[in-house]
Length: 83
Length: 83
Figure 1: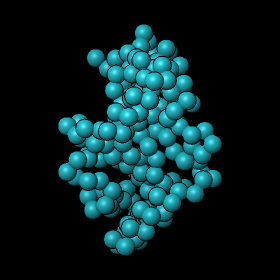
Figure 2: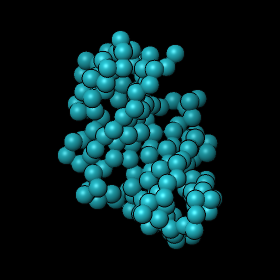
Figure 3: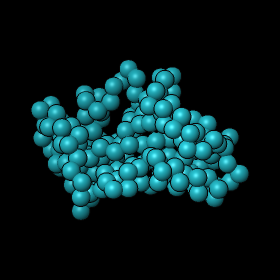
């Protein structure tokens, strides 16, 4: 079994209203030192695959077809073999 | 400036309906090899802090007070100094 840990972030040019709201909440809780907050997604996918190379091809396709919106998001991932 | 990268996951005992839905979508796109999907949050926080130790105390408090729901979620984080 292979585990893919995929991190999906808004592109830096894209405004992050959710991050902005969390920043406001942190300030109201007294965390004035917070300068900026950006929120992303972390998706863990477990898949059966012959090897890491084959898994890479599949994960890349999953990101492009479903998991990440290429217009506003970037993605990166790590693959690891799990017993 | 210090950057905290915080990853928040549902506890493994907690059902993940969002992950289940994504798994179904991946299967319908032909990714039959997918066995499981779990969705989490990745929150990046930039904060002014004297040093990493002081930042750690603040980030721990932010997670406990706002960012993570201790009943159903676990959190972990990495701190790095940014120019």
